[in-house]
Amino acid sequence: MLKILEVDSIVSNTSISGFDYVINPYTGCTFKCIYCHACFIKKFTDHSKDVWGEFLDVKKWSGYLSNKRKIYNKNILIGSVTDPYVKEEGFLENTKQILEKIQKYNCTPTICTKSDLILRDLDLIKEMKGKIAISLNTLDEDFAQKSEGISVSSRIEALKEIHAKGIYTIVCVSPIFPYITDYKSIVDKTKDYADKFWFENLKLRQPYGKNILNFIKCEYPQYYDQYQKITPEYWDEVAWDIRNYCKDLIYKTDFR
Image (cartoon, rainbow, N blue to C red; front, side, top):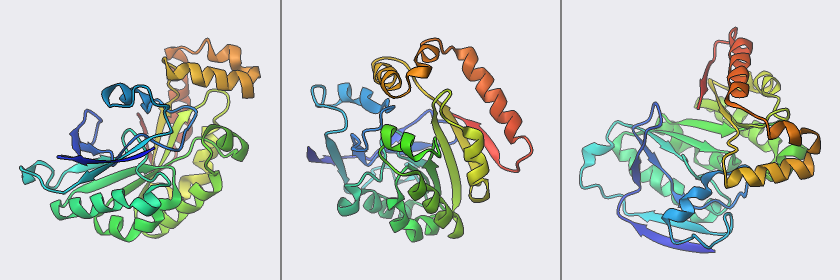
């Protein structure tokens, strides 16, 4: 279900460290990742009864700002909730149009995506001195297809091309699936093409936590009991292990 929404502003305030504002070109996401926790936005829209992953609102923005100083020279995160390069972006070009509109405000965008469709806009992003974060939480194609439906190889090849273009690259190891995500192998595989690594734990809160546990029970039953016992202390140990493993790299790590 595709719907066009005319919006007065595309820019939202944020508490995310390192960024002044966020932009989400779409409401909804058609990737249907099993771990997605963005479904919370349904209750703030007119999609409370719709199935997450089966609707997409396209935020059409004129580009006009009553206070142009608001975003001038600011760091803006694009894709904080939903991926700005869903497959529909291929023909809608909404994210591309938004980038073109904020370019005149001298913004520095950081774009989060798991899609190689972003390669289409590399020249524009480089001209804006933007950064690109590629989401990658596994090297296992089978797990990627089951949990996201997006290939690992396409993302790694995109990462290489982005890096070769001279654009600042971030590998976003998100979310980390306990006992499944081999973050050490991901670091080893991508460290030559990454300027920074982000790490984020798997969110198991309800209601999306139920979907994840059902997925684990069905596809990885050997881990089901452990998933029901995951504590904050477990994530503290993971963070310590990651920092210790990455201590000799010149790349910085960040836990989100």
